[in-house]
Image (cartoon, rainbow, N blue to C red; front, side, top):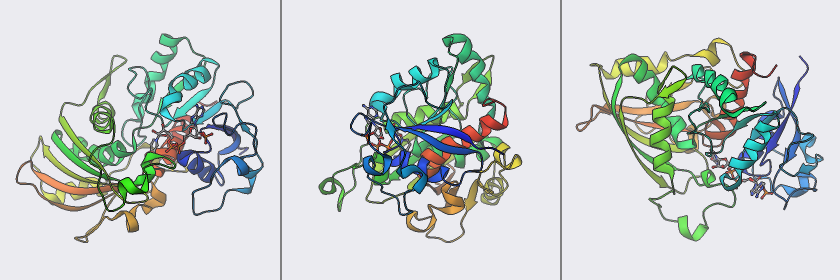
Length: 349
Ligand SMILES: NC(=O)c1ccc[n+]([C@@H]2O[C@H](COP(=O)([O-])OP(=O)(O)OC[C@H]3O[C@@H](n4cnc5c(N)ncnc54)[C@H](OP(=O)(O)O)[C@@H]3O)[C@@H](O)[C@H]2O)c1
C-alpha cells in the first residue's frame, strides 16, 4: 500500500517528537510536513528540534523544513500537538481549509460536536463528525484524544462499566514530568518533592471521563451516569502516569470477575488489527508491587493500561493501581490509533 503523507503541528515538542518517531516505520502514514512556532519555522527539523527521545531522530525527518502553522501546502491529514495556548484557533483554521485534524490538545475535547475518542472505548462517537460538518460548515474536521491522565483511568474503567456498571470513581494520580512538555517543571520545584496541583487537570479528567463513557443518543453525548473525583499530583518520574483508583459498581462482582473483565477486554482496534493497537489493551499484573512506571510504562509498546494491586476498598468497593504511558497511549500513540480507526472507517478517503 502506498503510504499517505501526513503533517504534524507542534512537531518539535515532546509529543511532536513521539509522532515523528512513531511514524518512522508506520505502515500507512509517513511524516512529510512538519510545523512549529516562528522560533523554529524556516529551519531544518534537525536544527530546530531539541530531540529528547532515546531512539535517534529519524534521518527522514532531520532534513525536512519546519513550516509555520498555516494551511496551504500541508497534507490533508494533520496530527496536532500544539501548545494549548495556540492550538484552538490554528486547528480550526486547518479544519476550515479542509484538513482532517487529529489533535492531542485540550482545546476542542469538550466541544459537543467534536469526538473525544479512545478507539477501544467509544469508536461509535466518530459519528459526531456528521453533526460537526453540519454545524460548522467545514470541509475538514477535528477529532481529539483525551488528556494523558484520563486515558489510563478510562481504559481501566471501560471494562468495568461494560460488565457491571459504574456508580462512583475516585482517582489519585502520580504524574510524570514529561507530561508538562519541554523543558517542563523546573528542577528545583520537583526534585525531592511532590506537587499536589496541576492547573486544570482535575477538571479535565472528571469531564473527559464522563464524555468518553457517555452514550451517543440523537447526535449528542449523554454523559456517564456515575460520580468521578480526581486528585492530580506531579512526581519526579520521567514517563508514565500512575493512578490509585477506587470504584463502586452497580452490580455485585468479585475480584476474580473484575480481573476476567480486564483480561478479556477487546474492541474494534483489536478486531481490525489496527497497526498501533495493543493486542491486550488492559494488562493485569499479579505481583504485589506492580505496575511501576520504570518497568511497565512501555508494556505493549506503551499502548496498554497496566493494572495491579486489585483489592477490596473499605470505603467504595474495590481499589487498584493503573499505569499508562503519557506521551504514547496518552498522546501521540492515541492520536495515531484515532487516525487508524478513521482510515478503517473511510474518513480519510
Ligand atoms: N506531554 C504529554 O504527556 C501530553 C499528553 C497529552 C496531551 N498533551 C498536549 O499536547 C500538546 C503538546 O504538548 P507537549 O508536551 O509536546 O508540549 P511542548 O513540548 O511544550 O511542545 C509544544 C509545541 O507547540 C509549538 N508551539 C508553541 N507555541 C507556538 C506558537 N505560538 N505557534 C505555533 N506553535 C507553537 C512548539 O514549537 P517550538 O518548539 O517552535 O516552540 C512545540 O512544537 C499540549 O497541548 C499538551 O497539553 C501533552
